[in-house]
Length: 201
Image 1 (cartoon, one colour):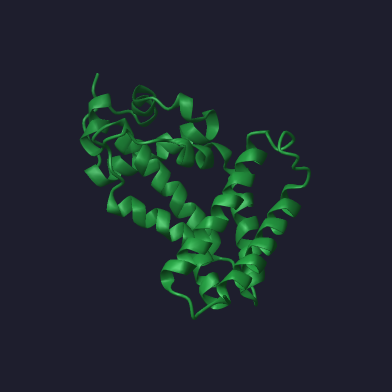
Image 2: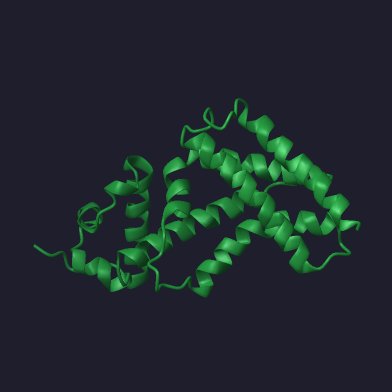
């Protein structure tokens, strides 16, 4: 029997997201089903589609929460030098990914359909993850354009993310990675050193 709505649409939306996140965290992304969410919150499947257009829309909002959580963790990094800050940001990212594997993996593994476009609000959340890294590159080379700083920050983060993927999917041995933290520090330091040299030219 359908349950009569006792919540506003915004409250219902938050309930759906909370339940969906819980399922992903505890059981993995493959366990995420609309009927399971509906059962968890005591509403009908139709109620969920009152606040989300489809499953893709729901997944995007779940992933947006993960991006917000990552950005929040990175905002707490405060080191004296930009070089040390970038290292700590990379370690903070690794720490978050290690402690939230299911959420983290599916945020980056999920693919939109070919004809779908990333909404501006979601792209803003993606950009927020890079804000702290880009700010440190701005300190390293304030004379460079915003474009060059962003390109450097995102190139480095692709490398950090790649190491995290190898580590958290159990493929680090195949890649010859024995000490994940040492590998990330090596990448960050050498990238910054090489970037500084190329920036001076």
